[in-house]
Amino acid sequence: MHMELEHLLPQEIEKRSFEIITKELAGKQLNPEHELIIKRCIHTTADFDYADNLCFSKQAVPKALKALRQGADIVTDTQMAKAGINKRTLAKFGGTVHCFIADEDVALEAKERGMTRSAASMEKAGKLNKKVIFAIGNAPTALIKLHEMIQEGKVNPELIIGVPVGFVNVVQSKELILKTEVPYIVARGRKGGSNVAAAICNALLYQLV
Image (cartoon, rainbow, N blue to C red):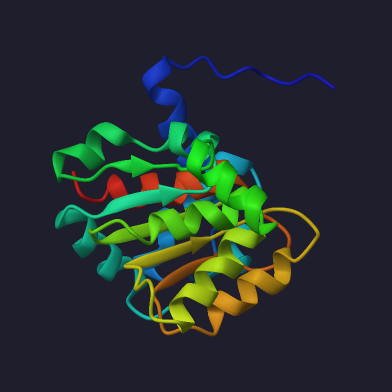
């Protein structure tokens, strides 16, 4: 089977990708507030399931954009997600990206209490004295801990991006977040990942510039 290569300049590749995504989504009604986020998740993964499995709480996107404009920080559960987020754009508004997973105090706390470092890192994040968006792409235990902290009144996130990937407690942890009053963007089911968490953050950040 002969396939023609497309000859594109580097700066044209992303634009062309989004044209293909838009064409393949033709006929699917997307909420305009959610469209850019859905398309960037598809662009990142080449998986059109995100057009159906991304769940948004009411006003999640405008609330998140407002928080980011006011200098909210982003907390991730992996260094990979942190690496993928556009920190320069975030910094323009006074925000910083944090990932506490590799911190010595987090590792020690997790070991002493028999919990995951992901869960312990959420407790550390809860002590930040700022508006915070949580972007969870790997660890369901981070989402479970966040849910527990919300119930106890220890955190009040501006947004939870709940997109861990995998099999053990992944679906259940996402469903816990869907039952909260906190603004959320959740990928229902097993799919997700650090790359998806970063993609959602960037889709929000790119709407600020």
